Length: 526
Image 1: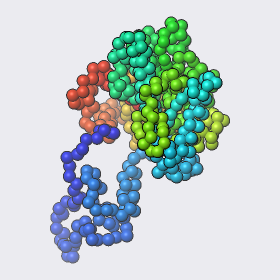
Image 2 (image 1 turned 60 degrees about the vertical axis):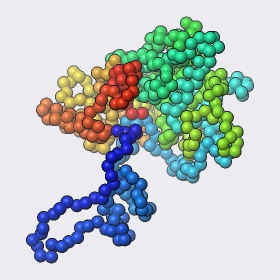
Image 3 (image 1 turned 180 degrees about the vertical axis):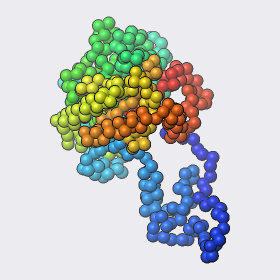
Image 4 (image 1 turned 30 degrees about the vertical axis):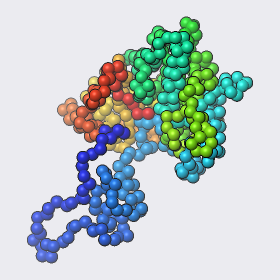
């Protein structure tokens, strides 16, 4: 089980060697292989008693451990993790300049929420909000109190929670003012949404109304989305950069239909991945505050914002769309503060790193990087097409810089995408295989996210390893492939810490409406 962990019933125990049969060689009968005692001392990490014991896993140890020993043993454990630069599953930034890392290191002890003590860190956040809001064409009303408003978050998940709360509260206020029921809010979205949208709906008691994908269409259908809107709809989620295929949903068409039908329903744009790509690769694409119905936008700074995790941003068109009762005015730390977050304390280092990146690169720097990534993704797409894969992502600047692809079923392969992904993992690459969203879940696919540190030469290395993996799998006979697929299934189950994935979570939770419960939906890594 990952992230949510159960407390183990195991007790801490020392490593013990198995019994050995006695040696018949003179002088070897009485060798002591007992672990060093507490009073034994060694200047070598691996000569210490700690190296002969299991690392504590269930209880805090009674005695101290030398700092160099603790560091070395933990570092050794972490060496079993994958190489982040070869993890092509994730959008998350894996490279920053040394100067940015130094700024982050120097700010590690700063609690961002303490505005009185760290006023300049708060000022830096305000600058970032201004820059991002203007990047998204927030309207200038001429009255600063009515201009766009925003805040930093831990990531887009928190930003989406805040955006959803704001839409729900605004809808409730309007219903109360009209003397109408306000207990059954719903939200319209694509069934291929990132899991945080499902969390927001479940946590805040909002009904999910889905536009389902098909085998040919993976993005939100604007007509179907607007048809689902009723008097209880708090808003429509439109995604700028689908997690599965990288496609941009048609925000402009959803906006047009809402205005054409005179429907008072806001749009929240989930620009977690696309918010730092589209403005530089496709500046004329209308998806942001240029559209009347777009009232809030979230973006992840730790994806194509080029900052280490985790930092995100959410911006509202004007204070009208962020109900005042959601904002807390507090003075715990010596100064009056306006706060709208799900957490309280957080480090200032990532906000500072975002500011560094914005002023270090500027628009020209971001544009250069995003165009390079787009060109690399297009090159990879061409190479995969030559190998016979079917491409599922638009590419050529019309989507995120990623390549979603699958095996051609007409080629008659005995292996599937999961077997290919496992072969690549044996070569060090993490290229995820997964099934599409509900109503198109029979489609298996793979995805390579092109990040800043994924150069063309590294791309060529990946293509060569894909060729080798295909050759290895193709040369297996059908029986061997079936054994290998079973091995892959067992390996994946072991890696995720369970024997078989159940379709519904255990416990007393009654869940009859969510995608997880009704479709056993799998989510690609973000």
